[in-house]
Image (cartoon, rainbow, N blue to C red; front, side, top):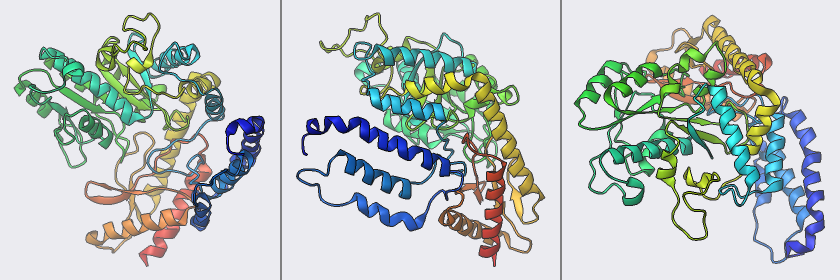
Length: 475
């Protein structure tokens, strides 16, 4: 077999095998445990020495399907509530198959006008969906971490220019440390972006007014007034433990008053803008200088997918810009080249599944999904409040429900260990998937509801399984 040229006629048959397996697998998701620990032995079938001649296309794809369907964590199903992970809508999943089929090199217009045009279209559609001005520049990224990196890199370039420096060309040497301020909701992905950018993961000045992490706007106002020169504010739309929001409109006013840059991390919270019921939570995001969000969360497109928007559409080009290599387009190329606008050069055509899902379901489809998930979160919150041995730790703002097991008579100092054990048992059980966190010093569960398949049945099952495990562990 060896050379794949010898098996060129098997390509369609291999894809057909995947398509044939897709129907039964997708149909079984509502009934499958999220993770079957007994299937771990299948992973051994991935191992072994690299063979000399290969096993052939069809045999290898069949083996991968056997292992994958049996051993995968079924995070695309309706009961994966951990880490705020969405699924893939039917249109997005099919669009992703098209992406692999066409295998476009998307960094340059020259290599794929199709991918470049699709990215331009979906960025415009996403700005419309989120209520952002069409004048903003944008780029698709692999994740919200990369989107935060993109927005904060533009902030760093802007900050350097105000010090008379071109950071993209010359680096940070000789410049003071870039001041970055945030409330306590700042996410590790923003810190990671600052770490990669050389600004310092722990250099963020956190100004909180309580142990939950709510931003202290007055303290930030004072701090900005004491800084000599420009600064960067990181606002957070959707805190991971409770789904709470920074007051973005107030932060935007501070940015205007002090000549600061406002970056908003809206990984999942930005989707509140899709419905009038929740859009007040992101009021002011349209005044931000940069905005980051995830696609593989509430947009429900396959991994990897994120997007970044920047108010000044020329700034990403200065930040990531043309490098003067003779084989690449010049900076004045009239066509858009997205690898000049973000951190990637080799880029997948991730616009195609986004285009497919937005065209398929439109503005109302995403509005209805966000409202349904909010209703489901409220339903779970109501179950928790009515249960005598559960405690809701924060109001349900969006799609995250933060609660713990608190049976009568158990001392406070024992509750964290008790809830930690419940979390371990819950993941081991596998019927539903939800992990623990630490919120205000308390170990808590924080299921997030963002999968398009999730229904009331799944929420009720989550509550039932938590109650069953808590009763067992608590004794």
